[in-house]
Length: 98
Image (cartoon, rainbow, N blue to C red):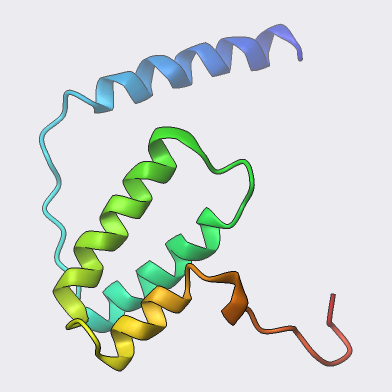
């Protein structure tokens, strides 16, 4: 890593730390968009190196959204729960399958 990259890392850390002291950002989502966001966060959480405080925040945020959009026992509730369970993963088929 060159000196410029190291300096950029230092600056990024400094700016990110400043974000912690900023006021909250109000966030308003349509329920369908919250469902999409949950799915994207679940996908990101599958990455083996996605750990620590950011991953904990994502899981907590999912829980908040989940409680807001999916009554317990509903189909949407079950779909969100399945998003954390590798047993429900679908194998990709076709010419682009991996």
